Length: 245
Ligand code: PGA
Image (tube, helix red, strand yellow):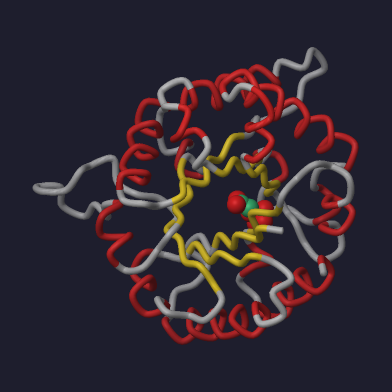
């Protein structure tokens, strides 16, 4: 599976960043999973070259560079050896990031050879299944703007907002996840004809921990996880990976 760590802003020292990367490199040795660490941008240079682990950013700027104080561009991120970037995380959308901005960021990422991990997810679930429309519109806004070839380069991370940063008990159920993944695949199929859309990887994120990840991975159609809080503690991160192998 593809296991993407999203360190968010939990890691605020280079010592901790290094320690977590060493843990990941050790765990990568058995090649059970493909590991990606999406780290705060200042650590990308420090961690580049970590054996067996790919690096990613958590966001890239909508700016192409130049006079844009404080922005971290896709070019700068790629030059430090990152090969992935999260785009459209709900914690960025909640700061006002629109679908238009997300499309631009995806384009910049692709132009610099970064694989965009596009996050989509509903704020809440309603009985009329309006939440499915949220997922369709977030996916469509981006996939509509891309070429067939570009569409195939994306990874989709389904992250229901109500399940983020909670505990395994409050995460999604296996049945609900299976249903959502099949819906996401149906939407992707509208943009990528034939069987090719099945090759686009779909991850789940939202309180994935060692106790619930094996169940969520079983027969739901996901290709991996986007892991927040459980990825920033070496014990919970190791336990999660071991539980999945
Ligand atoms: P969580 O975060 O695992 O802490 O819920 C996941 C995410 O927001 O990417």
